[in-house]
Image (cartoon, rainbow over all chains, first blue to last red; front, top):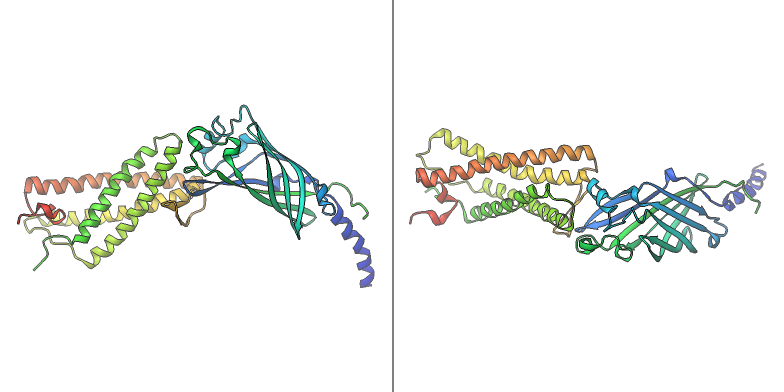
Length: 189
Length: 180
C-alpha cells in the first residue's frame, strides 16, 4: 500500500516542481533598500512595482523577468526624505517616473542559489547589474530572495550637493523578495 | 580642613560639558529650522555625537561627584538658598542625562540609528514608530527648554554671587578667581 501511494505521488511531485512560476503575488513581494547616511544605515522601500516573471526550476536558464518600479512610491525612511528624493537631484520622477529591470540571463550557482543578470534603467541611464538570489518553493509558491549593491551615482541618483558620498554613501543595498505561484496546470514531465 | 574648591577633575568635567552643551543646544535649535540638505544630515550627526559625549561625561561626573564631595558653600549664604542651589544642581544633572537619552530614543523611533562618530553603532532600544517619535520629539524639546531656563538661573546665580555678593562661590569652580 505504501509503495503504491509513493508511485502515485512521484509523478505528481515532479509535475509540481516542473510547473513554472509566473503568477507574481505583489502583496507578498517586497522591494527594499538600505542607504547609508553619515554611516547610519537607513531602510527604505518602493511600495508600487510590477513584476513579470517566468521561472521554471527545471529550466532556470530560460527564465524571464521584468520589474517596473513606480519611483514616486518610494519610502526613503522619512517624510522629508520622501519629498526630497522625488526631486530633480535624485530620481526626477516628473521626467523619469519608472525604473526598469529586464533580465538578460540566469545562471545556477548550485543548490537553491542563482544569479540573475540584466539591464537596470533609472533616470535615463542603463547599466548591467548582477544579483545573486535564492529560490525556495514554499507551500506551492516560489520565493525569490536576493539583492545587490547599486552605485547610486552611476545613475545620477543624488546629484549636485548630494553627490558628496561622505554624507550619503554611493553604495545602496538593494534587497528583493518576490513571491510567485503557478498558473498553468502541471505539465507532464 | 575642608576643601575650598572642586577637584581639578570636577572642574575640567564641568567646563567641558558646559562647552559641549553650548554647542549642541543651538545646533539642535537650528536643525529643526533647516530644510533637508547634506549639511543638515552632517549637523544632525554632529548634534547626536555631542549628545552621546555629554551623556558619557555626565555619567562620569555623577560618579566623581558621589566619590568626591563638593566644597561647602560659604556660611554667609542663607539655608534656603543653599537648598535651592542643591535642588538646581540635581535638576541640571537629571536633565543632562535625560536630554541625550530622549534624543537617542527619538532618533530610534524615527528610524535613524545613532552611530557614534560614524563608527560605533549604538543599539536601538525602540523600533520605528512615527507616533512615538513625535511624542519623544516633544519631550526632547520640552526638556531642552527646561534646561535653558535652569542654565539661565545657574549662570545668573553664579554671576550674582561673584558681582553682587562678592563671595567665594564662583571661585570654587573657577580657581583663577580665588584670592591668593
